[in-house]
Image (cartoon, rainbow, N blue to C red):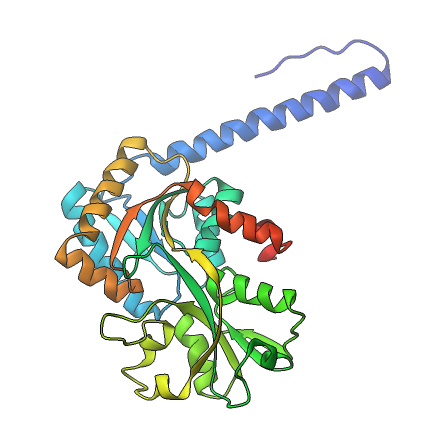
Length: 319
């Protein structure tokens, strides 16, 4: 409780009241943040309050949940902590969940991580590895014969994945902007296979998605591969038009203010799981991931440099 006596003229009293008001706002704001942290961490990992692990909806949600729950089960066995899996409807929703303490761990794409770091001081701890690589490219694909180069995209309809996807929106849209190529219109399909399918079904002329090198047998392993079982002519009909620059792979990111011992225990368990036969099978089904490796925020400085060169601010990109 504060007891303050003011002396002086009216103007002086007004200034004192304003100063006190600001002081109280700062005080209560700090206390509120401390309270949020304490509440978020209290009994975290218990059956009553499981660690919440969120995944982005870059693939069909049901498949992501199935793989996510397999990871959660393995982590529970390894750490003794309980986990709860969720797949929100957008990349932005996952980022906001980290910032509001609704999510403790998030499997975030590259750009989404950069934004989560900038807005909410999230911490990348692990990076995905595919075909021995910790980076990848975006691709432009089309089905129309008259679209063979990036310049042919001018005046066409594009299917992007999500506004927070580096390979499915940020990098490809920046390339088009730099080259003065103006699409007629665009849509956000909600995921990489969905964007490819928009071209295959005729809803869009061009799609942007991730590209990864072919496997040891020469089979393409880009986003089209996810549709091959249902649409076996997908590689024949939908061709690659061009690529983006190289991008660091997606992440496993932890919210700020997690208990240090809990975070370290989960990181080590995830790393170990990702190098086990069961883990490799699960991660392959999840996001075509072979394994996980340790990562730091500095690994993503190249993305910040690229965004700066493109005059793109992560803080405003999703507004």
